[in-house]
Image (cartoon, rainbow, N blue to C red):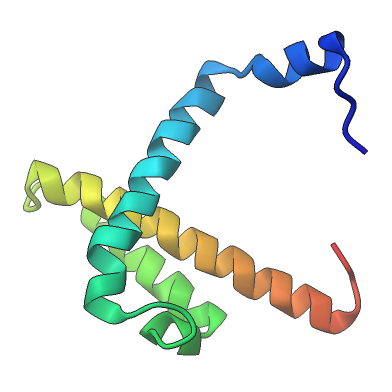
Length: 107
């Protein structure tokens, strides 16, 4: 149960700079998914990612990580690749979570 006393509310309202940066970045990732990924590839459960294995997700993440080290990409593509990595990380998290639940660990 969430406490709503002044002290607990103040703690919830205090967010680190890293936390604020994540909020901004995660919003940009969500916009990328809505404006680019879903129109191009479809949405769950009718998109390509639905069929991906953990290994395929990791392979795609490695592809974008490797591209980050090259100077051949334009600035906009470099930033967009970060969104793609974050999206793949979310899919990887979901796949791991699903695997854990199948084992009976209810985290």
